[in-house]
Length: 568
Image (cartoon, rainbow, N blue to C red; front, side, top):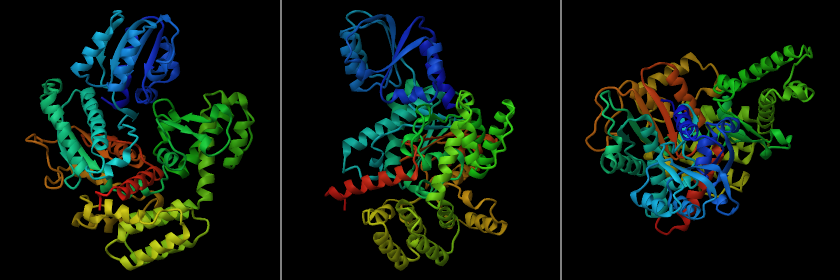
């Protein structure tokens, strides 16, 4: 069971058994769930001629009795109220209701009472309550993601809402897998512990019948960790294709909105980047930037062969011109032009922001010791006029996370320099990060300097040299997966919930990062799964982060923490 195919199966089952013309009615969350795994043309093949949002369809009055309504909604109180009103004033011939998670008995009663016209043909639970961005990577797109950084007393109902959504998402993943996991969590994180306990309560007490799949093999493992255990990964610039597009332009539900970076033809303002729908992207999503340029050149060359065109392409600019001069080629799914555009735009951003220079220092800060050289490199970049404000902030943060205990005096000098060079950043944001994710708060061996094995490994790596200086960083998640494979995860750092322990090595492991995942981590998971270790890893998180989103969450949490009297 891979996530994308699980969600596709649910949607197929929803649509194929209902013959005739259909309208598909979704909510703001299920729209994302469907759009990442199903294209518009595929919906048309299933005779879906209209896709509407449940809150906007309430406003319309015209009758469409020739259409059958297929609802796919999250079982929220708001959606139940929308349905109640819509069943009271029926507009469609038939109503088929599908929910992405467990319905409460009271909700079923409300729906039954509302169906006075007896138009509801079926009510079903199809557990696709997560956004399957890639086969081994899901997200929940939680809007108020910053709330995981705040103590529970600040906004109890907000935090409860956040926890409920995470528990729902995790429960749906395991219901889709038809498994019940053993649950572990990161000891130093209150929110990870809370979510682990609430998930266990749901799976082993409240809905134990639903989760009792009577399987004989070893239970899968659900591990819940906190983003703040590895604050470095979301702060780094990225140099592999998918991660880089998200870092420099932004990906939302596998779509890239290019309007934020310039003027583009109407059909290119939003492009789809999906490993399921784009063979070139699937082959290159984890490749580094240098190789992507070469591979795109090869793809363009192949197109030229098709057109027996023999223009000589030397540079990325030549590629862009070539594509523009061949409008008929743009019809070939716009695939070539899409990738040329993305790489051209990213090259411009890299040049403008001097990211090669910045990134080299970032990687040194993340991977290698040497405080004196690091201080000098960061100081030089802070003084460099070409370096942008956000890059200066990230460099100081990376330095602070690395050397908070070793060089407090130099750290103060960097704080002061940052304040004078980039005054738009509120003072104290770096200190707030240290308070949230400093060395005293973390469980894992983030810099490989706590554990003898890691120290030895880092020394060996230093002696061997690094193939590519820009992608030498390994997320902490990589070490976590290694220790699971080798059975070395310490119970004291990652306790089990309840009395359900692991009997033997799990074959499936779901790692959920409260606070969000990154595409660098999903790459790590995909490469690990390709290595055939005998364990299949799935990565999930509350959102998919890039450095901009991580900093935005940090600023928002800091703002609320300051205005709240209960947080010291």
